[in-house]
Image (cartoon, rainbow, N blue to C red; front, side):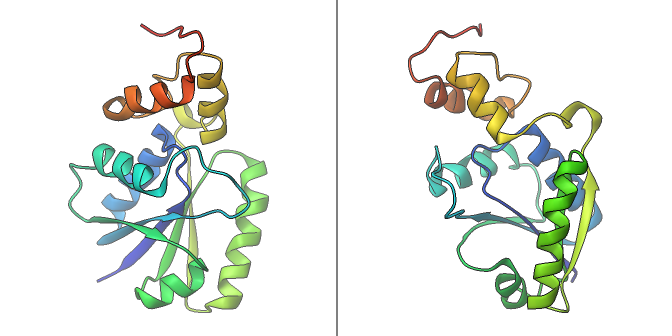
Length: 166
C-alpha cells in the first residue's frame, strides 16, 4: 500500500488545504494528514481543534488518517512507511521554501520523495495567514475556509470585532 503524508500546521485549515488533501486521496491509496506543531509560531487553534476541523471537512474521505505530530517529518515518514510527502504550491515564493524542505527531508530520509501539487486557481491566494488577517478585522472568510467549520473559525478569529458577514 502506497502511503503519503500531507503535513501542515493547518492553523486554520483552508479550502486550499482541503483541495490538496482531496486530490492526494484520489491519487494515493492512503493519505496521512499530519498536523505538526510549528515551534516558530504561536497557533490560534489548539492541535485538537485543528484535528477536529480537518475531521469535519474531510469526513467523506475513507482513505485518510488525521494525526497530531511533533518532531521531524522525515522521521515520522520512516516510522509510518510513507513513500512521499505531498505539498501544495500557490506561487513561486512557496516553491523556494518547500524545495529547501524537500531537500532537507531527502537528506534525513533518502527514501522519501516530495511531490508538489499546484493549487487550484480559486485557491492560489488563500493561506491561513490571510484567513487570520481578514477575520481579525471582521472580514468575510466564507470563501477561504470549508463551510462546515466556517462559523467556529470565524467566531474565534473575529474576536468581537466588526463582522461583515451575514
